[in-house]
Image (tube, rainbow over all chains, first blue to last red; front, side, top):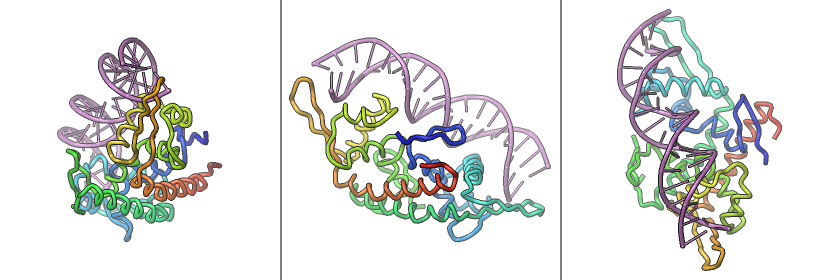
Length: 114
Length: 114
DNA sequence: CTGAATCCAGCTGGATACTG
DNA sequence: CAGTATCCAGCTGGATTCAG
């Protein structure tokens, strides 16, 4: 029973805490897009197929709140905003890569060509 | 755009496919319980705090459907059923362990004592 | 271009009751 | 002991509209 409460939410184990940071449909695609440097909202929107405007905005906010990325606004017209991974998020990349490897192994096992 | 369809569901990437196998609140706790050998329904129920009857049953079914565990029934009275990890599920254990490590690192960063 | 707010349909999971 | 079925409240996320 190593559960704990953080920011008014109950977690049953450390993995749940990790998944609050990188889980869900969209956080990993966003983090992977940013692995090679900063990107703007519009470019992320183009780079991630199927994501809706609302989900991209809300997921970016959540990642920012969790200190997974920083947000830099430029005082230009039209507005320009760039997002960049923090060190905390960079630590997640190897874990994400291992998850991807396992996913590919499962797909092979299921007879899906990747 | 490497999305694909499997069993009538759309996946955007291999990680989503992996998370269909080990994701959600309860699949990882179940898999970890079984890492040292077979267990019965009742013992799993006792070993996993907070899980409801319905969730344990449905998650066990899903894991069985995805070939993550095998189900052995004994013709006894009262009934006895044992669940055991498949090789496919055992391959997930290192990935799960790495996720747990990252979760603990995040907790430390957030000032939570584990 | 980037972001906030609202409405709403569909899924998730808890509580409960019932079965062999 | 193990499993099924039903009801229902709450959350998730898409579509849409408005704004600096």
